[in-house]
Image (cartoon, rainbow, N blue to C red; front, side, top):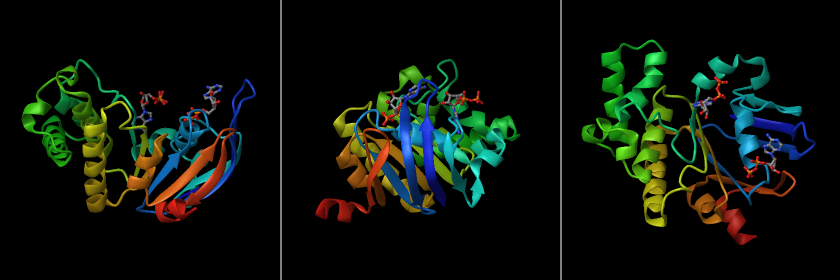
Length: 227
Ligand code: ADP
Ligand code: ADP
């Protein structure tokens, strides 16, 4: 469970990106932060894994204030997926995925085996694994990004506009794939998007943010549609 309690983020230039945000992301659910550009979605997400520190308020993960955790330790339990998968261009796809288990001390051979399993899990083959990232389509690269984020088997997955750089058909595909994976893995997922349809399709819960970084509404998609 992730709890935002009266969280404020003010950047050094005075911009208030997140303004007194309080909400609870239940364990094992997929929560979507949605809203127009600049309303504090990314900032909120990055405060969970301490890429950004809040100015005031607290964020707890499993009951523990993230600010009291060692950032590297914290991130081992948090997968992170961004818009352009952020793959290492000079490493084969399989090795991009194997990097995380390697860092956790797994042998090269075991890490590769695990990486091929993860690639299969997101709908890719060993043949994809042996290519370089630039030799895959944008949608395939996003799948690799998801596989890599899952490599340490983290209980929490943060996804920042993971599908917005791919065309609508591929996006639908990736959304379906994420829902299937989530049905199997029951991670605590927080996903950021500016696309309200995506939020309604994917979210168990939807947090609607508005400019100025305040929370307009936090509800199930059904409640959102009836309002
Ligand atoms: P979103 O993800 O909803 O597009 P962000 O969290 O990226 O919103 O940004 C929220 C607000 O904070 C915006 O006004 C943005 O310009 C501002 N902002 C983001 N990062 C910084 C920064 N490093 N310094 C100053 N202002 C920032
Ligand atoms: P560090 O503080 O260890 O230098 P940064 O926050 O600067 O790490 O991030 C370095 C790179 O790692 C960035 O590309 C960022 O997107 C990525 N990253 C940050 N946190 C995570 C995470 N929890 N899981 C995966 N990648 C991450």
